[in-house]
Image (cartoon, rainbow, N blue to C red; front, top):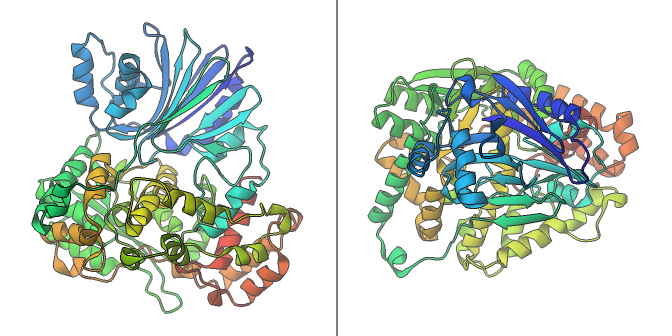
Length: 591
């Protein structure tokens, strides 16, 4: 895991190496072990490195192969790189390093941009072809690794984080009304290519973009998850599905042990992370380090789930670390947590991941995490009612969206309106696509390919990389995701959700962890905003910068601040925290 950046010009002028250096410096936390710059006339790359595979300087980036005429800046990890390396060696390629970056470079030379079809892992990369002047940008299937773009005239910049793009300067930072509508309505999920800023876009997952020397751009979507099922799929028993999911998950977890450093586990105490720990222990992985975080209680809600993580740690004899974040420390951590966000992310548990990552990075450089299981295997409360829905868009929107269009028009100032409900239109278009016939499948598809990417997965990437920690997500192995897409929804939503995954878990972990109420990283203080948190929010929303921006309507803000606990979204988030976070993020990043 690292940070990449770059600039390419399409008018024959030199790339701005100083701008690339600023972008690279802005991502120092993502790659604290090394940095590098490459410049060749109209193209310049930057890189910050976190040493995980091939710890030698032979794997430094940007990596240049003068014989092939290729240069690469790469972020991520390719779990099958050793097998690909052997295949490429058999085809006559010679290697000077033992890492996965050089494998990607030579795979690109051998198979072109379609090499992405051969890669199993999480990745974003930029490859420049010296002789043709062509640039290729690519992103992994599930969007685990980010890639932001800023096009201006005959110049393209790109980086692993949005703040890095801003550090380069000369970027249009005006608010994008479409991105804003998504943020305020679609639970802070802003689907690609949009961000909340007009001048910054993001490459969609499962996409590679080819830029010719004259700037002509061609995007290719190289993977889609399919929710259609064969007769054989529908005929399989519960036990047979359990066997298939068990084997696929075990393989995925094993793949994510590929590293030249130790690998730990983020243990929330839920089924998903507990299952990872159990399978690693079952496979004989020792010593096994696990990490949990908890907060103070607030609003009558318990702020930790240590009793469940303790059960798993004791069951499997892990070296377990518990981090408790008190009210004073939570407040102190918020500014740096928001600074670490590539985009404003409203979920309360961002600060939990940030604090947890800070502690974990003192012990290991790589962790496995349970993100994605709910979206892939049907763990959320809105899936069962969709099983027999006659109004998929309406039923999904009522439970997932934070507000309807009428409420949106009340909170957002008129100058930022587009005249239509952008997020509702997006859901309608996405649900109308082929490949998912049933309402629940449509919801699972949008959640696993859109919501998951720009909420939980982005959160984990941003918060772990803020401390130079690499997080791997075995539930998002694309082969496991493909298998899950074929599992009949009845197998997913039963037993309170994730039925087939709970069947797998019963073979591995204690029942009291499986049959518990669904949990999450609870941070009650950011849901029931009061005391110093309310003062902080008032100060932000009444600041000179907020007044001049006039993003939100004053009467609505006053209503929220008068009674924060009365204005909770269907997903149990704070509407006040949502607007305060947006304004705070904009001010934090100098927008």
